[in-house]
Image (tube, rainbow, N blue to C red; front, side, top):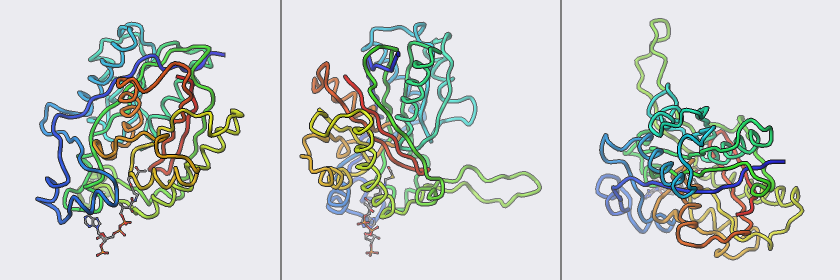
Length: 323
Ligand code: ACO
């Protein structure tokens, strides 16, 4: 059976790097508070109209395609995971298709918040297993900075903008096992309302809301759910923790990753992280980290990687793959 094998990666961060000290000039916070609670030192944020969800996605995609040695006409599927697309329609995936000239590819967006990249990757894997297509581009991209309330210190210090992409090819190697799940009954702990319906019958005149979060509930959810996911997935594949080269978790928060490592009784070296430099980039965090690992030569052919995402919805997902 054909599965998804990653054959190229790419990423793109906005040019502007914003430090904790920069944030402390307009909200009541400090570098010491942010670093001790989250591990974040800086993040990249879009700083001009020329940088958008689309431009970040396209740059990441071009790098992934160059790395994979393919051209746009080879693509037969483009999936974009995002909660912060520039347009409601067309989808970011359709706009990426146009920019790349990937006219043979079907393209659509998928929203599973911070788990979105893995939900998209698993969808591609399922398309490959079904024989529907052979070569796909999977992008996780966010410009969360546009849905953040920049006067709310409890959320604005946590997030960053960016994009990560992979090219996946149908192969007899690659994906070993995957799982995903959702709990819509707990959606309120991470919330961002779309624009208010302003039709003449329900008009309220209210502006769209910004992202709100119950930080402690999110923390508890993640440190309980991620180890469960990891154990389940390893059980499915009949592997044990010691056989995993690296665990690439959604980069929300250093303390969260450290708690998960402790729960699994594993050293932090097994959990590469870039949250100190990127903040939480939601659907983009896992592919950005994967690209950094690949480009800095940290991954070798045959390594077994466990990727795990968790976030709004609530949603969670994990993939086990051979590099
Ligand atoms: N700077 C300074 N003080 C702050 C800041 C800030 N940026 N933010 C909150 N505080 C204050 C609060 O006002 C509060 O003050 P008080 O005691 O006077 O009332 C105090 O710090 C403690 O606030 P808590 O919310 O209890 O802080 P906590 O220790 O829980 O840390 C945090 C908050 C970092 C958000 C933590 O709950 C957490 O890591 N949660 C995980 C959530 C997360 O990472 N979400 C990312 C998005 S979701 C996802 O990606 C899955």
